[in-house]
Amino acid sequence: MKKIFVSIMLCITLLLASCSKTDVNEDGIKATTEYLSSLQSYGLNCDMTIHRTNKDITVNVDVDYLQPNYYKVCFNNKNGHEQIIVKNDDGVYVLTPSLNKEFKFDSQWPLNSSHAYLLGGICSDITNDEQATFTVNGDIVEIQSKLSGMNNNATKLKFYYNHKDNKPVKAILLDDSDKEQILVEFNEFTPNKSLKKEEFNPKLIMDNQSNNNESTTPEDSQTSLTITCGFICDGSTLSSSKIDDESTILCYTGEKSYTIVVKKADSYSTSVALETYDSMDFISTGLILSNANTSKYFIDDIEVAIYSNNLSSSDILAIASEITLS
Image (tube, rainbow, N blue to C red):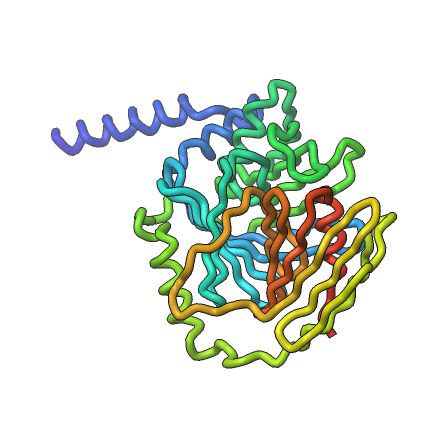
């Protein structure tokens, strides 16, 4: 009798669950966002392609998320250079493990812009757009919506979701002309992944990464500090330069004045918190961090800094993308 009662209760539970689940053909948006917003945690791996005017940038991205606001996002470029964004209760940090460098990031990331590799952001963009539309093609739901946060020139989102397997397939950010700006293709997805708050501690992450890199880190790179700047802002000219064994300094004056400083990056035996930045973007060598008058990034163990009070973000990206070492 007890077994019969248990079987009946199980059938009722399954029936109620099936009745409460939104039919994807009737409302693919609700069915998708209900599932995404129900996740307590997740892990994923994806390939992200960013389309620039002069070149495409491809980066592999690993994401760990734990409710309500813990993020660890690892970016690896084609040369194996790794940088990590960590968000916990104390703030947002950008880590460069190979140099034991830790930058404080003073912003509301990831809420200050749209990110095609974060499922919570995708869900918010979709639910915030009352005019969002969807189509169902077999197992795939395609949702189109506006972006609630800016990401360079992107203003629209296309999100593809496998409703049968409950897995994200890809996300595309487009501009007003429907030109693709960013493509994210999801490779692996682990819903409700077993994660602990301790895993989002920058110091522990840096210590762990440093131990993993200990045997492969080169001792002293002999990379030349002679650089070539393939892009110069209109109306600006090179007014002075200084090149020595320690650094290269190039000063440009004109309608837009700026200074480029290239030097061997300081490396530390333990992680050291350095300057605070408030925005970030991608170039081929990795993340470029910016604040009111400074932008900084790394080419392997070489630090490149651009100083200016009157450059736009597009100017900075154009300059940084065309700096090469020779």
